Amino acid sequence: MKLLLENIKELVQVEEDPVSYRAGKEMSKVNTIKNAFVIIRDEIIEEFGRMDQLKDVYCDDDLLIEIDCSNRLVYPAYCDSHTHLVYPSAREKEFVDRIKGLSYEEIARRGGGILNSAKRLHEASEEELFNDAMHRIIEIMKMGTGAVEIKSGYGLNTEDELKMLRVIRWIKETAPICVRATFLGAHAIPAEYKSNPSKYVDVIINEMIPQVAAEELADFIDVFCDKGFFTVEDTERILMAGLKYGLKPKIHANELGLTGGVQVGVKYGALSVDHLEFIEENEIAALQNSETMPTVLPGAAFFLGMKLSPVREMIEAGLPIALASDFNPGSSPSGNMSLIAAMGCINYKMLPEEVINATTLNTAYAMGISDSYGSIARGKVANLFITSEIPGIEYIPYYYGSSLVETVILNGEVQTFERC
Ligand SMILES: N=CN[C@@H](CCC(=O)O)C(=O)O
Ligand SMILES: [Zn+2]
Image (cartoon, rainbow, N blue to C red; front, side, top):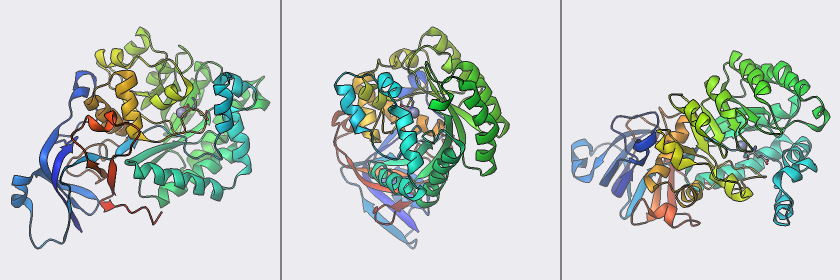
């Protein structure tokens, strides 16, 4: 089956010679083609170009469905490289507590926060978790996301961590979106291990990781390496154990302080280090010449009123930046990547071109999938969205809060959102 998108006002993030990610000054470069076409065969982008070149590649007898994209832009689908979207129930009461003045840390100390989610997850069945998460998956697909990383981390014991990861696998097998799973047993220290956290690290290393690996439930391993959570020493032990089973690290780092999370992530070849509210020269130096993608989570900083990551400084130092949603019930209850792009521009002073790279190609890299996703390139998976009628690429971050995504194509198929 062939699909032809024609009369595209502007085809965005086109790559003749695909790169893995864009960094520094390159981040403000996005290749586009005005008055363009795209041909999709089965699930793959076969060809693209200017409309006046279409007759050279279009063959009449091919079975072809045509979609007229007049006055519309076409983008590669967003890749969201950091979410916790499998969770048992929302935490809107904590939201009100914070409005009244309690801090995120105080709420956690009183048994709220991640431990609250873990308690509720223990009581939920796999089916309930799957059904709730699928609503969120459909919601983010409608808003233009075509690939998503999902973490465990609300289990915090072997049985419940495996339960979460099986739910993520079930989503992977069911939904048309590309899913990558991350094992995050080290998300918080359970109450019973408070006085001896390294005993919990032993459980992660000796019980959880071998079972996660035996069932092939995860692509990556994560640790919340931060003040009051896991130390650099804990993190090193966990990452070494994960690497033995081929689990590449992705790290929660430097959200609450200068804790060494960035450096330990880089040392163990992390695909990404995420959050990065606290970044100074040493962290920037560690990231330069590394293979690790610095990932900022604007939704969490916005929702918790945190200090902002020095994104401009990092870009000026030649680093790449990825922006992900951090969709979770406690610190970022939204998976709207257009809104994340708007926050990138408004709060972090990123250019519209920079946020396009940060939410497509660079997040694809942070999920280890930039050879197949994150741009419009021949041979990549045909995951893209068609906007409503908009003037140009500045408009999505400018017109924040409204969905300008009109049609979503995943694996070469126009989504109707009825089958999931
Ligand atoms: N920082 C750690 N973990 C999550 C929060 C999860 C929660 O509050 O439930 C985050 O990325 O923001
Ligand atoms: Zn997170």
